[in-house]
Image 1 (tube, helix red, strand yellow):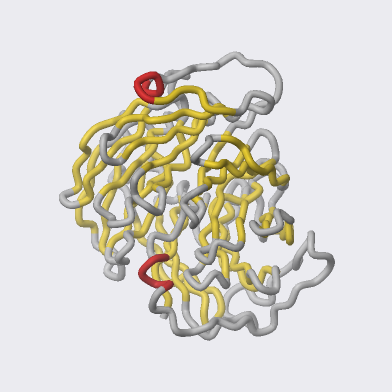
Image 2 (cartoon, helix red, strand yellow; image 1 turned 135 degrees about the vertical axis):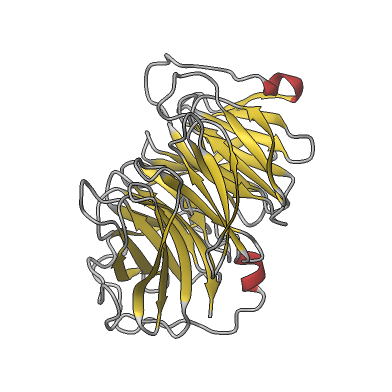
Length: 393
């Protein structure tokens, strides 16, 4: 899920009847370090009783990979070519699977001049439709019924001017409009209730709340250390409140993740080495969770017990107990530039994408959330980023 939250959680959590068991993986060292290596890179001793599958986008290859972890270990089962400019990279960035598991959606960022959202059928991986969005569309947040996608137009290479969130009807696939939010929006997610869509502003240090019924910004919250709090509500919230030249520490948020209780969201402060827990009723920070350098993507396990943060600048993953607030482990990943994360519906495993550096192939790591260890890894294509859960068998 761009690391991204598994849209299949709800349907699978209710029907999952198997428990995956790690084979030869066990925790080593202290609780804050975890395991240093996987037992198997592709099909060795580290296995599970069930087979879990994810989709992962490889931005510098224009390939989406299907990765499984099960009795045969971790396997890259399929490489799907995407995009429409053979002579240049389209930039496969964010990927999200529909709640019913029938479709997956992909953003390609490098448009001419705009990016695209693509709709595919799972399993056959046949292209069904595409639609043009804004500049550098990135993370995709799907409504609980799968009928609407909220896609942030990150505008990575553009001028530092307010960008937008594209609201897309998924059947048929068409853009209904763009909601102007802030400079460099990212990390789009929809609340479990479906009432609000949340995203963060990397350049403006803001959390933005959008009403999914009225399609307007309802609240903004400042995230800058020392100045956190509600910025505006109602009509005043609809206009971007730019703070481009502030000196001192910055949050530089890259992700917002709703809690399963519907009362909190979690924000990755990429520029401040921590995750914020935010009370949505009061719009205040209730807890600070220190992480490794440059936390990037987040995931709350479906059982609501754990928060997982990928530390992009530290080649590691932090696992935080949401009950106690304790960081249970900070586990190294197999390659540098750790990016996306998604948990399995039974909250047993986490799949993590690692971009790697230069011409080195990316990897997807599998972490056992019981033993707090990396149990498998598999190579995919170049610059693996967005990742989402598909199904378990």
